[in-house]
Length: 357
Image (cartoon, rainbow, N blue to C red):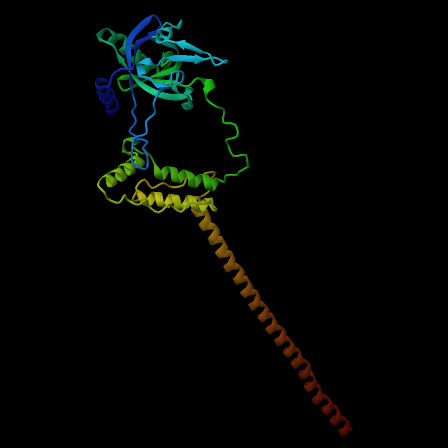
């Protein structure tokens, strides 16, 4: 028997039923009783007079007689449009012309994903009422299991007809109250009304953060607020100073979404001691955002190096070109001077020839 189912059975043994009736499954009738499936552990407070801690109580007073009345004197009434009170007794409500007054009437079987979680309300365990109900109860339970469906039903509870869903948890059938479809508000004006573009790199980091956080056992989660309140109560009861609140986290507007996501992934990995390392999946054939950033920075550095190299090369080329120009100029000057030096001996020879003639 699994943990949830064991808790269900133990709960039904110690908690009194809140409703007795039957499940109508075609021509099959299953006597059952409802037991609350949830309970509140919230810390409750009393209202007191701040000057002397005297209890503040609300007294039920009749407006016509101006006196306090007991619970046994209080009934129900419907207030008409003109203010007239129309008395309604419990006997009137118990004889309503409805088949669901004392029956959970199953009207359909549908896949579980057809139920919008927004409609989910209170939950109740359904217990078989007596040994004769065990066989049809088990039949319905096993039919729900094998079909992988949930049953949609109508039933009356606490003065009104309700919509419900029957599903199997372990070996127990659970009834979830459902809101009627017209009781769920349309989400008009709730979504952001500005155009926002989400980049693939941001989605990659969001996926990495989700993978790093991973899954959690819900049984490990607890109400830290309630524990903190209990510590304050215990400290004040012992005449001690209540514990101080921790410094508020550094909140504010997120200016750089990518930086915030990267930091979240790092902190999530560190908090888990390196367990559950998650890599950003490569979408559209691109690398991870971090790799992309590294490539960008590398490309920028390489570009700078290439640019500086080109500049130095061009300067070196310019200096070489200048040196070549200077060398060529000096060479040309020397060349111009050398032929002149060679011509001089020729003239002397010519002059010598004239003299000899």
